[in-house]
Length: 159
Image (cartoon, rainbow, N blue to C red; front, side, top):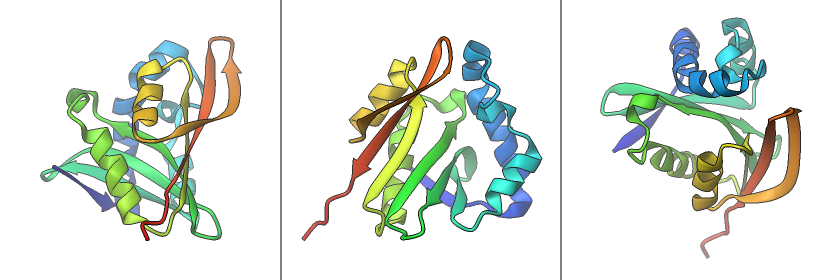
């Protein structure tokens, strides 16, 4: 079982470390300068300080094994998840699935979730589709062999 823990500013160095661990292999594959792997601590701090953004540690028991960021819109009913990163040593254990479910439960007022991932990473695309996300049709090419594909998930009211 996992839990989410809101990140405090004093803990950003650990988020920065987790980003490096979680995104190193994707950076090695694509050499994308916009990768979370390349994000500086100063850039991370600037995002952290934005009023509609928050970061969460993904915890397994008491160990911080990943993180995710949520960016709300002004209405509070639409949010973007990204990035989400999990330590490769614990991938394949359902942690991403549990984290996605927990973040949706944490923000019940959000009725529309958005995210993007690398189109060529079919495992990631399949994961988000399994979680109920649908492609919007928008694709943005970052470089010749790498594009971002955008997803949306609408949460229906349970009346």
